[in-house]
Length: 218
Image (cartoon, rainbow, N blue to C red; front, side, top):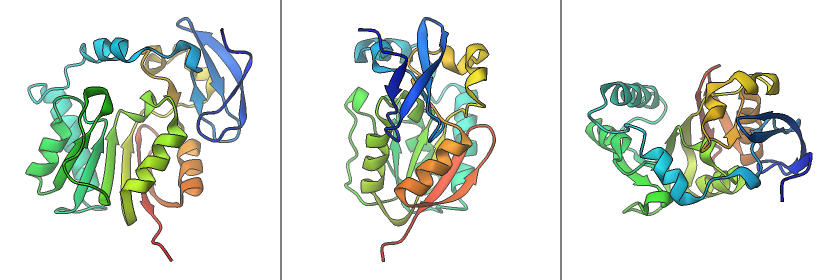
């Protein structure tokens, strides 16, 4: 059944209103946490997701992709220097970022349930990273709860995802046309996440990067 005009936000659980129909899907906007999300009715099955990801050239041979991840490693270093233990959530089948982190001196591991990849070492981790992954979360509240459970007190989460600039921009936004993208965050959303899950926000630029530190246990 197609969702109604209101749908529960998968992050803060407030009720959100459908704001636009675009690319054959409905996008709902939560006025509490500023998340824009696609209701479950339009979510792709896992096999369809894997087929879509197979079109991505996320390999070490893709110099542009490797350069982007190398820049991310450089941004991580000042707030979580090596040799700390790092978990890459949504590492993908090639685990390119894990390889780059290890070359930079990190004790790095990957996790990606879509490809059956589990880390060899258990929690807690000093840092959790996720590059271009959280926009695929169907249940971001659950996923952030899991991240918190994997991170030591004082540990760092560093995330990249393209931030939305308001519901009115969704219709012409290339990022929203990818059918595997179902959760869209803004800087305000990241501030809500930091406050709700007990993080100090370290950095959040206007485009795609957010880093935050978990508060130490009392």
